[in-house]
Length: 327
Image (tube, rainbow, N blue to C red; front, side, top):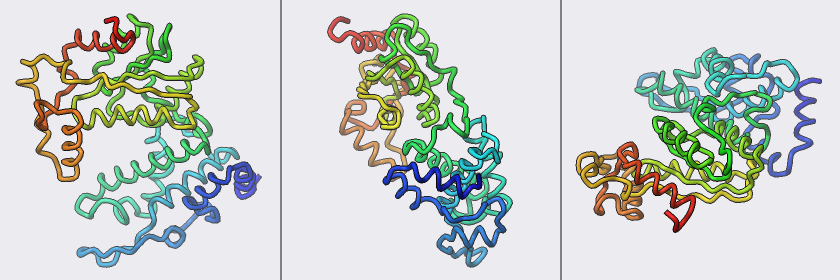
């Protein structure tokens, strides 16, 4: 079966919403991008021309449309056997497929993205982020799963334990370094525990959600232990929102913030508090809103790393969450 025939077969099974989204994001009439010349690629995915003082007029491409289309073509090629599954992580796809294409056509050092002064590594990071977000959008809209045709592997598998008694009760921390605490709670309370390194990606969430569903979990009660600052709180909210994605199929996800200023001893707060006021203008609104909502520390823009918490107080907070009113 040709790619065009397979594309028609796949699209015939899409919902109206999926079909509309795909046509907006992808050039479905594009020929095989790996066989395109640089001129053809630029003509197929035109961007808005930009003027550079150093180089004059730059011929650009539409990075987003190019990446969505390339992922779609690779998806179809894997289904026909023309392309092997990735079997690695998302960066593996960049190194094996998208990166070589972009570099072949000199699209890593030029075109959209960061200003010229930070191109190179900055441009590559920008493209990797766009690629990751594109994969996320395909997955949340149920075109495929990370572990489906591409066979992406979860690099965070070692940092979670499914609860032996209460798998639907989930203790989460953004700190990989606190996985020792997760293991302790998993053993003591029989709950599910998971630690990430900052905000977990949707790839990890897919694997995690599937593990919960294999244990017949339909409703999730989630407790998040994060830094006492706006970014920690955002990570907790994002973790819950990702679990609530309709594609994962949970009936309900109830999230509780475990983090509070009460978890820290006063003498520790005095020497370990972090000044959050010296941030960029774009982040200042976020800090101000968080201080307004939580009080920060004594009403000021200070935060705390959760690593500085009194972990006996953390344990009591976990027990109160598990059994309200009994701790």
